[in-house]
Image 1 (cartoon, rainbow, N blue to C red):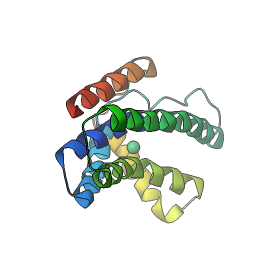
Image 2: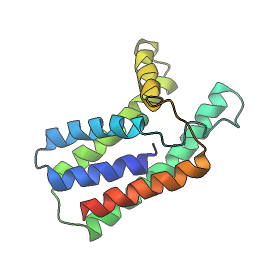
Image 3: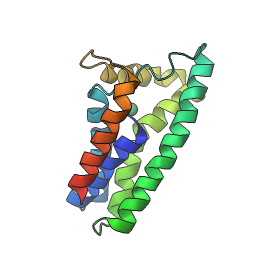
Length: 152
Ligand SMILES: [Zn+2]
């Protein structure tokens, strides 16, 4: 899923939990649960030729996605319920870390950790059901807004 959708889970966690370490761990767990839900972005870079070009394309999307996630956090902090920043930010880091780890392993070619990329990819295909990004983006916007609503 997009980082923005994962971030909404972090916001929700920060309204329910007071322990920063638990918030961080639940952030990671929520990432993997969200990734298991068929979310329509697996074919995001299918039109791009070449593994490296594909990766760079995904990174450009991730860059925009991260900006949106920061805007979401800003909106939540300025308009949402009062939450402890020492809980909110560990939760955010937890939801981002699984994808940051994937990007770092791929980018720096950390072959020792390629098992993680395989594991992360397998989670994405847990239900073995893929669909178009045309439905994936609206679906993820709905997920993000629904979880955001639950956090208010
Ligand atoms: Zn992921």
